Amino acid sequence: EPEVTQTPSHQVTQMGQEVILRCVPISNHLYFYWYRQILGQKVEFLVSFYNNEISEKSEIFDDQFSVERPDGSNFTLKIRSTKLEDSAMYFCASRVAGEVYEQFFGPGTRLTVL
Amino acid sequence: KNQVEQSPQSLIILEGKNCTLQCNYTVSPFSNLRWYKQDTGRGPVSLTIMTFSENTKSNGRYTATLDADTKQSSLHITASQLSDSASYICVVKEATGKLIFGQGTTLQVKP
Image (cartoon, rainbow over all chains, first blue to last red; front, top):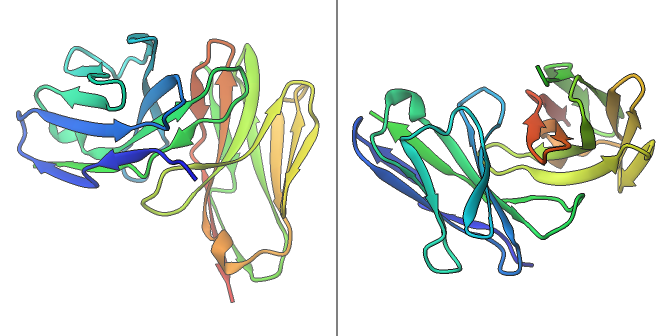
């Protein structure tokens, strides 16, 4: 069964460094998402991406964040200058077109900023 | 502010027993409501999706209900198994497409 994959599973970085989190959505999916979950807290929406552009972003997704679909298969989240509070689990999700189709989530990347 | 509140925060039951998890939301306009299961350290997995017009939907031992008038939903788990131990998250989709997540109910099934 096709699934969303994410790499790396765990990323440790120093404050101020840039990180790139990678996702490979399910191949026929058209909508892509990034979410984050700080330890012990609820999942929070970051950004949605469709047709090679951001369709919606939350207030969390500031100028330090960017997304890209560089090659038609990967979907990346870049954090330019990480802060301690960026430490969280980051989930990628994708879905097909349509109103009620479920989003399939990847296993997540745990980002630890020291 | 659009919010999704779940109760209880955590729950411990014995294997084989039934349980019901609650979800209240204030999201408006509303598109659909989903229940997800999230195992520790994993991404959420969809259990059910219900639109405004659906009152109940089942997926195996999971049955979700929705009352769009009172903005309440429940997830009933029948004959619980040890593998049901997880966090169960109620998620409401705004008409804009954005998903609003609840805090989750942590369920622990004991033998």
